[in-house]
Image 1: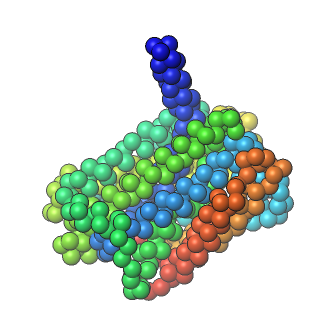
Image 2: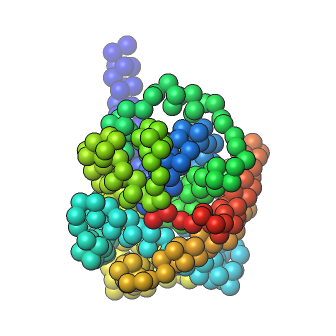
Image 3: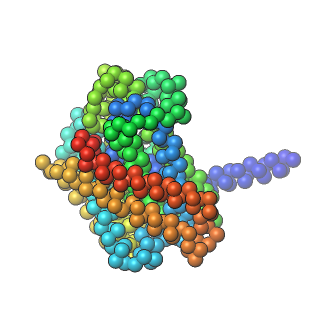
Length: 423
C-alpha cells in the first residue's frame, strides 16, 4: 500500500514537471489578448454599462478555448506553424495576401500598444518621448539577445503582474452579490451603445495574430503530439485566467465610474478617474496593469509578425537563431517595433485612422484564418487521429460563424458616429 501511494506521488510530480516543460504558449497568448486595446474596451464596458455585460464573458471564454485549442493541437501534431500549413496547402499567392493583411493589422495593433505605454507612464509623470523609446529598445533587446526559454520566462513573468487588476477590483469594493447575478443572468438590449460594447467584447477576444503566434510558439517550444494533453491544459488555463482579468477590469470600472456616473472616453481617463472614487492605489494599480500589458503585447505582436511572414514565405525564423541565421526574421521584428513607436511619437500622426484600418484588416483576415484552420484540422493526412470529432466540429463551426459575424459587425460599428476606438 505504501509503495503504491509513493508511486502515485512520483507519477503526480512527474506529471507536474512534464506540464511545466510544455506550459507557456497558451498562457502567454491568451493573456496578451488583454492588451491596451482590450483593457480600453473592458474599461469602457464597465464605465458605460456597469455589470450589464459580464454574462458575455462566459460564451467568450468558450469561444477562446475552442479556437486556441485547435491551433495548439495543429502545432503539436504537425510540427509546423499556421502560416507554413496555409502556404503548403493553399498556395504562395494566397499566403502572401494574408501576410500583407496581417502586417497592416499588426502595425496598427503595435501602435496601440505603444500608445498604451505612453498613457500608462504619463499617469506616473513620465512623458511619452521617454517611455516609448525605452519600451521599444527593451522589447527589441529582449528578443534579439535572448533564447526562446529566456524570452518565454520574461513573458510568463509579465503574466503574473495582471494580478494588479484583481487588486484594483478588490479596492473598488463592488457588490459581489450583484456581480454574481450579472454573470449568470444575461441582460439584453437593442440600444446601439449596448450592442457596440457587446461586439467590442467579442471582437477583442479572438484576433488573427493570436492563432499564428500560438501555433508557432508550440512548435518553437518543441511540444509534440504525445505531450499535447498537457499543452491543452496550458491553453485552457491561459484562456480562463485572461477572462478573469477582463472580468475584474469591468468590475473595477462598473463599481466606481458607472456607479457615480463618471463619463470617460479613454483608458487613461478611466485610470485617473478612479483616484477620488477608490483611492490613489487603485489608480496606480490600474495604470501599472496598463503599462505591463502594453509592453508585454508590444513584444508579442511584432514577434507574431516576424514568425508568420517568415513561415509564409519559407524564411528561417525563431528566437533561438542568430541574426546571421535568420536576418529576415529579426529585421521584420525590429522594423515593426521601430515603425510603430515612431508613428506614435510623430506629432499629428493620424493614429485613429491607422487604428481603424488595423481593425478593418483584422475583420477581413479573421474569417479566412478561422476557415483555413477548420479545413486543415479536419485533414486526416495532416492530423490523423487528432483531427476534430463531429461534436467538436459543430462547436468549432458555430463559434467560427458567430466570431466572423461579430468581428465584421465590429468593423462596421467602428465607423458609426461616436463608436471609434478608445485609446
